[in-house]
Length: 93
Image (tube, rainbow, N blue to C red; front, side, top):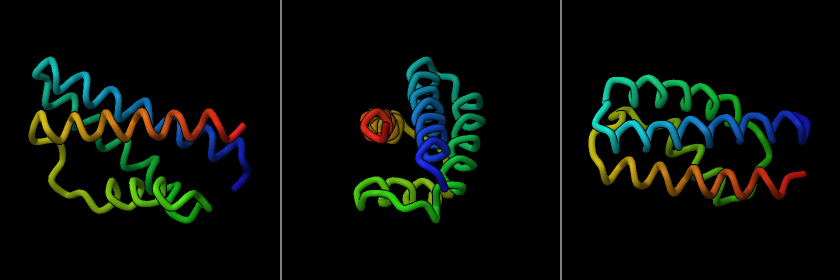
């Protein structure tokens, strides 16, 4: 996987996690679930990528999450992951 592909996948994952957090904040749980499923698709593609340990941990957690977005606290955690991924992607270039 090239750096450009990793950049695109991590950026897409970050954006979808941000959307999830925003939608939960507005009370739109069905739409948040839709974007969480999209985020899982990005994270599955990143599963085998060579990434830093803390980023890999986020990817694994998203991949193994079967509960979806069920609370405000979970949405806040996903927002934090979104910011961490975005910062990581910016430094890939």
